[in-house]
Image (cartoon, rainbow, N blue to C red; front, side, top):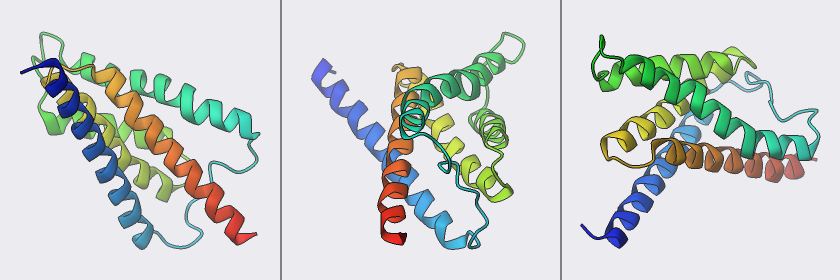
Length: 156
C-alpha cells in the first residue's frame, strides 16, 4: 500500500471515529434528564478553558486513560488484552475521572469507549495510537466547546 493510501485510510478512520463520537453524544442528549449534567465549562477563563480542553486534556488524558491501561494490560503476564476488556477498563477510569455529575460520568464513559477503541485499533493498524487518540479527543472537546458557545449565546 502506498504512503498516500495509508494517509487517506487514516483520515477516513479518524473521521469515522469522530462522526460516531458526535452521533453517540447526540443520542445521549435525548436520554439525559434536563439539568442532570453540571456544566464543566462554567466559571472558566476562556483562555484556560481552551488551553485545558484543546491542549492539556487531550495529551495528559490520552497517556493516563488510554495508553497506560493498554501498556499495563499488555505486560507479558497478560499478553495482548482482549479488545473489550481494555476498552471497558479504560472507559470506566476515564468516565469516573470526569466526576462533574453521575450523568456526566455516564456520558464520558461512552466517549471513553470511542477514545479507547481508536487507541486500540490504531495499535492494531500499526499507526500512531497516541497521536490519533489525542486528535480525536481534541476534536471532541473543540466540538463540545463550539456547541456550548453557540447554545449559550442562543440562551442569553
